[in-house]
Image (cartoon, rainbow, N blue to C red):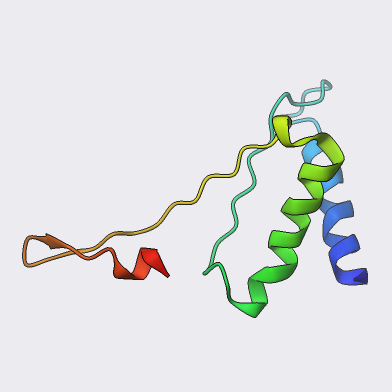
Length: 83
């Protein structure tokens, strides 16, 4: 739980930091989570995003899942994306 709180504090600090040496707070913050959803190593990061939704409101958070769909022999292979 302390690890998740630490990530939430870091995310809050980074998202409020001025960008490009400017003084104003940014209107938007893009957070990229790499890796595979479902792996135990990614769970604290997903939890931090869930907590972000609770803190700023679901209407202020957009979560986008991007997945590679390889094409082998002219056929798209979607099985890895389904799981």
